[in-house]
Image (cartoon, rainbow, N blue to C red; front, side, top):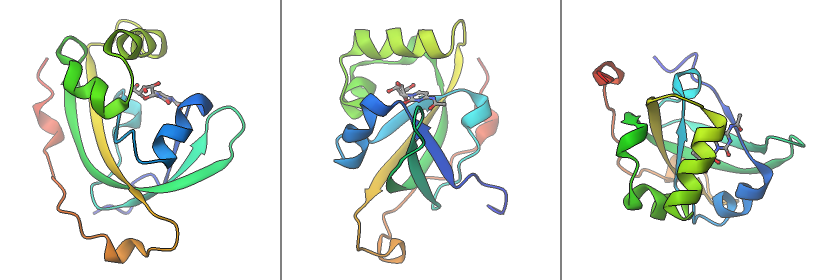
Length: 129
Ligand SMILES: CC(=O)Nc1ccn([C@@H]2O[C@H](CO)[C@@H](O)[C@H]2O)c(=O)n1
């Protein structure tokens, strides 16, 4: 099932303190990075220097249109909405069909098996925009 799910994810270095502190609980990626599987543990690395930052548990992966990105997402990104949209436009220019990946921080020292947060399994097929 999740045999080929990725086990690593990179974030821009300047965003990694937000991930490691649990303040940032979503990321918005394109289809090439939409293959994370809910329930799996993923290692977080900095994009620029490939330094391991922490581990996260993938909670859900669901389609999200660029135009539907709102204040709710910005709060979960721990970024101002205009900054978030500007960043996404720079990384994924002219891409309307994006994916919202929700995750929770796995605290160091706590086994991932003890983290049984309910997670959503959402069909990828409904990316109809
Ligand atoms: C290969 C690689 O690392 N790419 C990306 C892509 C996106 N992001 C961040 O995710 C959120 C939504 O896009 C924003 O906060 C972005 O800045 C990131 O950190 N790194």
